[in-house]
Length: 462
Image (tube, rainbow, N blue to C red; front, side, top):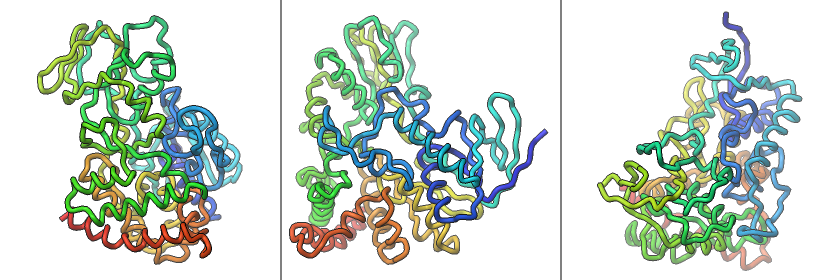
């Protein structure tokens, strides 16, 4: 037997994107009734299965939902992120989303939450413990699973591992009790960076760490992502530097050289040219630590691991040295296919601003509440591609700049952006007074370089 319920919005997924969308929809549409479902027991999405020492890579100040601060604007006072906006831990984020769900969503009387529920499609979900099925008659479906994040604990490696190999997901690293001769970290992205830093912070000598990277990545200096007034020169000044570097570039390769020279990009090894960009951020102190690991293997993708060797796709091998193999090879985003955000009765939140999925989800909800017509809604929510290779960076940056230009022409949206804490940067810019000559000069540089930069990006795309 299948139960029947009715609602205005069926929201599939209560991760960061779903929570940010519903939070804004509740505030902007006072009469909306919402049903949320999730396969996990509590709100928080992939944070429910993240590794125990995970933290945000971006400041907590503009993560979460619009209506509730995650960090209270704190700065880290110790560690490798000292002096920068605090980076909430996984447990802090889970507690935060649980609190938002219990104290705002459920008490509103307009949200019904069905945890431990698997979405079967066609507005039907089933309870994972008792099998009970429920059909939802909804005016609109909000698919917040499109940007589904892959985490190490649920990732299946795309290479073979012999039974006698000490191989584990990053989640199990803190559980090791019998010390190996060393550790081999497989994966060059954000997860691999976290694994290396955790090992170093826990007194593993750099000489006992091997890092297997199929590709090197461009990295972002976290100091340039701070949404606080005292970081104006770093954050907004860095944007001006970026636009000028793009505008003056003679080729894509020259553009990346200029972006590195102006401080927009960092790289781990100055002698190795990156071919990947996933938007990972590091502090300068973290970069120093990462560079102490000298045993970095760049032989392409891993094909198999046995007791004695690691074999790569191109046939080359590397001895395992009796190490524990730590899997950090999961791609953060499984599916990078772009869909219309608004299509018939389905809303698919995606990134409409680079690097900021929660701001994007909140903005999609604002557009749903205040803009009429599917074409007009999609016009304001052009999807910004997720970063991967260097060509994607060009497309991402061009789409991001185009959106910013369109949003600037919509006064109600501009007002909301200045007021939402999930933005941060619009408020920094709008708060500049005429007597702050150094900041005014940066804004003039930013505006002067914007159109030439956009023109150069378009030429690279063509």
